[in-house]
Length: 160
Image (cartoon, rainbow, N blue to C red; front, top):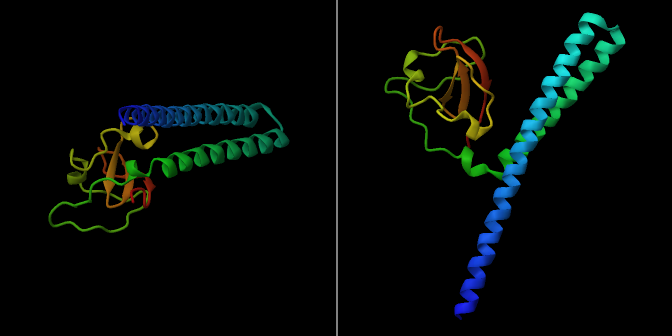
């Protein structure tokens, strides 16, 4: 009986090690795809400056394909790590209610507080915010410029 329990623990430990290795590989793939996308965008800029129309058309196609590959890797990550996107229930500020908001809309400063700002965007594989902030708004995620309150990017139905 003792040997069975020990072998079950060893098997469980090995299985969790394989799962973490698969996640690390997925993160590496996403980083690689982001790097490829940046290279394709640089090639497109060069083609627009120095190339022919055909060169530009080919580079645009390459950029589109690189974006699609990055998007698919992110979807795979989201599908395999669904618990990350099931955050705690959203509770908006008192007196405010959820209304869909788009790019260019304004968000009240109360939403930039620590309660709504996503402190670790890399956990969700969100792009680097720079001077902006990622904010949870309902089940959506918004990239907001904190100076003006303008929404820069919107990911609808980001959280489950």
